Length: 341
Image (cartoon, rainbow, N blue to C red; front, side):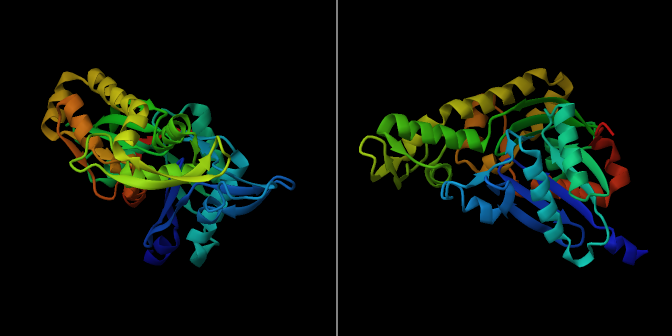
């Protein structure tokens, strides 16, 4: 039986706006690559996927476009998503391609039935034998070893590339949640817009992401940072280099950050009093790539007057949660979403 168990190919997927992670049973996380597909406009043929395609963003010749097939956690280019999933699944399971995998995939908690169906169909088309969907905050909670079966409430704030999801979890369910289509992408866009308006400096999304990671913050830093930024001068039309300070970037990203904080407060207002008492004791848990923004925990602490904890390796938690669901399927069956099938 153990031999067939080894060949069963249980696959957990975090299909994110920015990155896709794939966990294969007995092998761990085997794929962690950008959710990007490069397509030849003339032939509609996929020419690169994942990390290779991301390197092409903003650098491709006119006939090749690098697309991100998810926007705000929602599939916007279904054929590109199918190609990406097919490629990632093929690369994940080199050793036993003859067994089609059983898949658990995380989806935003605010997904509509149509959006969930699109994910389900894409995975089925990509070669999955069985497809199960789980809300990302629930998967993240399971990935953090939070006992989701307990009657005691836990608040998880999962900030991804396209969405920020806030969920209060108890007794295998999401008691109340708030989902805003704001995440790392909107923060990057705010940086691009700020540099354009303030300095007539045009930078690409990869540069904006670098700025966010190197000097971005949501709360004043003990020691403010600065960095050199290269872009194109919109007035002179030539390349230009400038030094940008962390205070400026904090101001630039204030609006999307405020929307995330507002969603957290909204979820807290909807929380039943008994569970509010639990959250007061345990605090809020921050996860997802956005959790790594400096000072976000401090800002949330000040705004909510609750303890805020940033989990280690926040990017991996959703995919680790999907893997744990597959490992203990009977226990976690209750957290799976109806897929409309």
